[in-house]
Every structure is written in structure tokens, then in C-alpha cells.
Image (cartoon, rainbow, N blue to C red; front, side):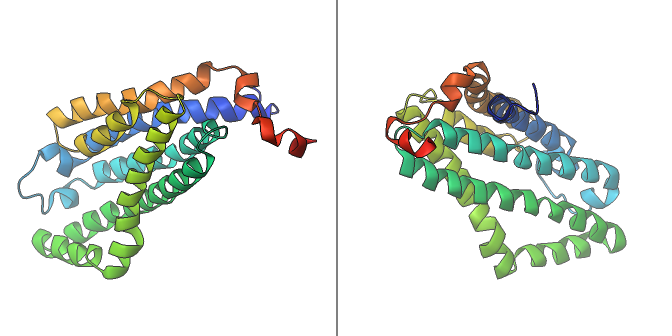
Length: 223
């Protein structure tokens, strides 16, 4: 892949990121000590496992970051039909992914507070921070709205015959199911990889000419 070839580079980068993002997501879930506990009282778990939290939060952060080129590639696929829907749903998805990436910083604060204070007190203080209206309305709600945007963008791709109809359902079920360790992690991880991966593989396998093809009505604008 030549960095000097913008068409091929952007196509392969978008496709590869859609495949890599779910792999990192599942890896981050498995590395997360609280999620790996599978429920119950998790107060103090992060404080006792600082190294694992540090790695898992970073991996989860990058799982969301790598979705950004993938979503941009998905938007690119619907430039011939349902363009407005593609832009709106894709924009919401991008904003949500950015917010979810930022929320991964919370794991570091939970870990340090639980280590520096009595575990229950540290966890309660972190819970108060995450209940702050600015964080709820500025990060959490936009983040979940972004997942809905990703689902809607997948439906737009299916409508335009750029993805199978089941792909957006598999992606969303996988994202929400994977944190339910261990069965949900296996099933959800496979669903997420299947849904995002099938779109990513289509992008990787298409020709540069197909990727770069302009809508018929835009020919004059490219001259």
C-alpha cells in the first residue's frame, strides 16, 4: 500500500480499520478486570489492577478511534444514493465514537481513586463525577446516540446494497453484548467482527476505480 496513492490508501485504511476495531474492542473487554469479573460488586477491582486497567482502557480507546476511518469509508460508499441520510447518520456516528473514546479516560480515574482512597469511597467519588450533568449530556448521551447513528448508517448501506441487511444489527448487538463476560464477549465479539468485517472486506476487495467512481451528476464538478 503506497502512501502516495490517496485512492488506494484511503480505501485500504477504511476497510482495515473496520476489521481491526472489533478485534481491539474485544481485547479491551477481556483485559478489563471489572468486566472480566462478570458482575457483582466491582468496587476496588480497578484499584487493585492498575496495570490491567491502563492497558484495557488504552485498547478500548483505540478500538473507538479506529472506527473513525471506517465510518468515513462507510459514508463514502453511499455517495451515489441516500447521500443526505448517509451524511446525517454518519455524522452522528462520528460524534458518538469520539465521545466514547473520551469516556475511556474514566477508567484511569476510577483506578487511581480506588487505589488512593478506601475502595468504596474512591468508586463513589468517581460515580459522582460520571453523574455530573455536563458529562452525561456532553459525553454519555452523545456517545450512545452515536451507536444509533452507526446502526442507522449501516441500514443506509444495506438500502444502497453496499452491505448485507444483517450487518448493522450484528454490529450494535456485538458492541452492547461483548461487555457481558464471558458468553456475551464471545458471541458479541463474533457478531461485531462479522458485521463490521463484512463491510471492511467489501471495501478492501473493491477496485480503486469502483472506490473512486463519481456520481453521474458530479462529473462536471470534478473538472
